[in-house]
Amino acid sequence: MCVAGLLPQHIRSLIMSKDIEQISAVLSAYQDALNSANVEDAVKLYTQDGIVMPQHSPSFVGIANVRKAYEGFFEIIKFDVKFDIQEVVPISPEYAFARTNSAGTTIVKGRGKGDEANQELFVFKKVGGEWKIARYCFSTTNPPK
Image 1: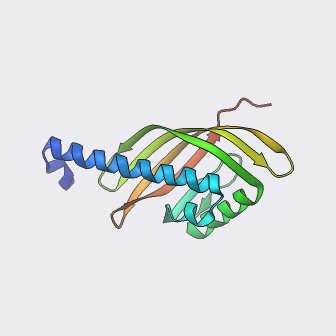
Image 2: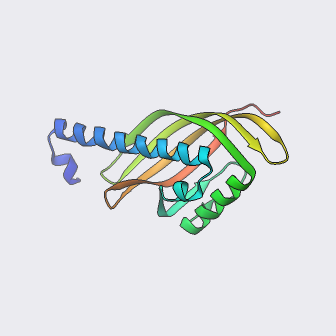
C-alpha cells in the first residue's frame, strides 16, 4: 500500500483535488501551445520519455521525437481549438489520466480551413513535483468524408 493510502480520507481528497487542479492547468497550457503553434511550450509539458500517439501515424517516442512531432504538426497545421475536460483521475501519487474532447478549426497547408473535433486520452506522471504528459493519444470524432 502506498503512503497516501494511510492518510485520512479528507487529506487524500485535498491532495487529489490539488492534483486535478494542476493537471487541468497543464491541459490548459497544452491548448494554448497548440493554438499559438509554440513547439517549446508544447514540449516542456512532456516527460523526457513522453510519447505522442497521433491517429494514422506511428508513435513519437522520447522527448526528441516529441519535439519533431510538434515541429511537423505546426509546420502544416494552424490550430484554433478548445479543450473540454471530461475527467481527470489521479490513480496514484505519481500517475493520473485525463480524458478530453476538443473542437474548433484547423487550417491545413494545401487543404484549407476545416472543422476539428477529437477525443483525447492523456497519461500524466508527476516529475519533480510537477505533473507532465507521459502519453498522449487522440482520434477524430468527425465522421469520415
